[in-house]
Image 1 (spheres, rainbow, N blue to C red):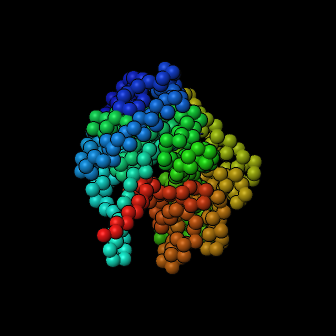
Image 2: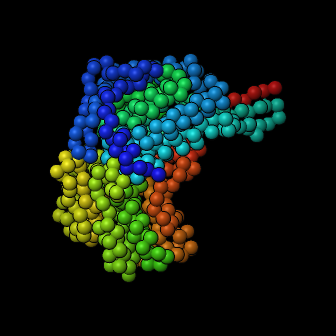
Image 3: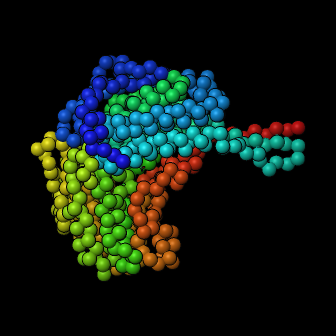
Amino acid sequence: MLKQDEINRLRAANLPPRAMIIDGEICQALSGRTREVISPIDGTVLTTIPDGAAEDAERAIAAARVAFEDGRWSRMAPQERKKIMHRWADLIEAEALSLTVMGVRENGTEIATAIDAEAGSAVTTIRYYAEAIDKIYGEIAPTPDGILGLIHHEPVGVVGAIVPWNFPLMIGAWKLGPALATGNTVILKPAETASLTLLRIGELALEAGIPAGVLNVVTGAGSVVGEAMARSMEIDVITFTGSGGVGRRLLENAAKSNLKRVYLELGGKSANIVFADTPDLDTAARAAAAAIFKNAGQVCVAGSRLLLERCIYDEFLDRLAQVTQSLIVGDPLDLNSNIGAINSARQLTQNLSFVDTAQAEGGTLLLGGKRILADTGGFYMEPTIVAQVAPHHRLVQEEVFGPVLAVMVFDDEAEAVKLANCTSYGLAGAVWTADLARTLRMIRAVKTGMVQVNRYAQVDITSPLGGVKQSGNGHDRSLHALDKFTNLKTAWIQF
Ligand code: NAD
């Protein structure tokens, strides 16, 4: 149970300047340059982080290469590696609340969401993959007589993990867990506005006994550190979560360098589809609000498009408006806040411009649409609902990554499917209905990597998360994520 006085005590802590982790050393950028960490809660400077450059990325990549080639991690006995990863998870768990408060001060997620989604989820993820280490076997091929065919799963080598700011610990762990469990070495690049917690768990990894050079954390601009990683001849795999634009750039740089594998977890414009036979419209309305307003809509799988069957349109919107008006936007470290801050001033400006364009294109603003609490110095926005949007509108086609819901109406199942699939994205979505046959038809018809039925919430580590279409390729979470970080090697032995 979270306690407000404990949160208040932790938020008062001074945050000393942080450092990167390269080759087991806690160090500054070679240039000595730093960048300020601005809190979205009140716009103040929290601390500084190193402003890494290409030379820092290259140092980390070289260390990761040496650490991979000498086998200090990949050839360590599996049970020993597993023990170290569990120790790491234990250390993170012991600091879960202070890590979460530090992360919220930097990225603005309301703490009630962050406590489970961030440190809590990172611990679960690392333990899950630690357990996999001594439970995954190779294969024996069905060969002709006199041949033994062995199929090994080998680590790929050096992994570059590039992550966004919305859930840094959760998404970071989704990359680090399977990459490290399979014996690779890693360079982790946090987002510019969410580096602190990842730097801290990098320190804890050293304390847990992960050898020097196996996990390196390099901070700095994506256009500098991230670019250097993507262009490197010594990184074998990039695993990325972020925007489509950067995803394209990574593919270009991979093509121009060593054809490294690039796994992309990109954005979404997920449809939350409510049919008139939904068993409980109140539950559906509450879930629809949470689907878009949790973490102020800064969620890749957010239900950012609500598709309503015409005969329940007015009634459902009334219920949704009631729920939305009851949500408290405010200080994300106040347990009473339901919606925290927008991550940065830039993101806030972008969200507001989406609302302006939506109205200019003919959408009707039903609720919200404005910046609030500007006197705090922080970045806050009203939960916003825009109706009467059409498939060609920007609000339907583009990801806002903010608390802005687009509402559309449909007359039958075929139209619902057409609208659901009318964007270039295909990440997540939900269907609300009491009809089993329709459920099965819709699961097949909606082109996404994940569809939920009569719920809209996070699923757990046991199930893969990944997109289709321009939402990306490859999967985070579940045992399927291990495939990204292994090569299959075949050996046929004649006897
Ligand atoms: P972003 O693409 O701007 O940045 C993501 C990361 O890429 C950051 O670490 C950034 O520094 C780095 N980067 C920037 N330019 C780079 C370059 N040229 N080369 C290499 N790296 C570079 O995304 P963001 O604003 O941090 O995050 C929001 C986006 O992430 C949204 O589109 C959201 O949908 C997506 N997202 C997807 C998932 C998923 O699982 N599919 C989860 C969370 C967020």
